[in-house]
Figure 1 (cartoon, rainbow, N blue to C red):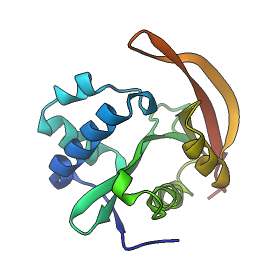
Figure 2: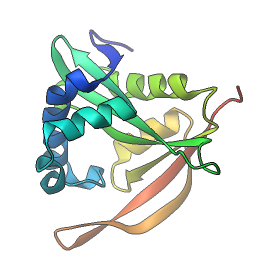
Figure 3: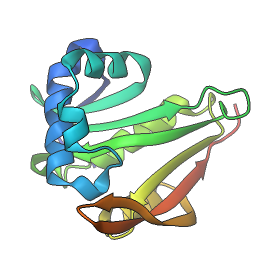
Figure 4: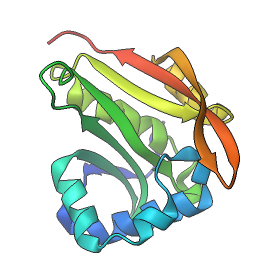
Length: 168
């Protein structure tokens, strides 16, 4: 169910809206990300621009506003370049329920199918909404990392999930 949003790959020229949305996500939902607001808010605009130039990062737009992101980090080692890890998945509350999150992940899958064999991701164990979405899209659990994140002295487990992609 696609609402009135548009998806497209983000590039260096999108660094400002990407940085703004990313920092908002890190501050509002610290358990959903391995990175922290403290670390990333100190990074210059150029760091965000370089990140967008060197990895596949999709953006979901409502009009002129970037409201969602999802990226794939592709491993580059000889023995690991067959797989990628989904990162930076976030949909702003204004766009939730629109189908944007599902559309972002489906588009990532479409863009790497034929180039990668496996997509990996982690989801914080209590994030049942994200976990259900990933299962709906075919991801399967293959493990759980206890105490994966430590935030303000509290530990959070992460569920590890994988999707085998069709061969090229």
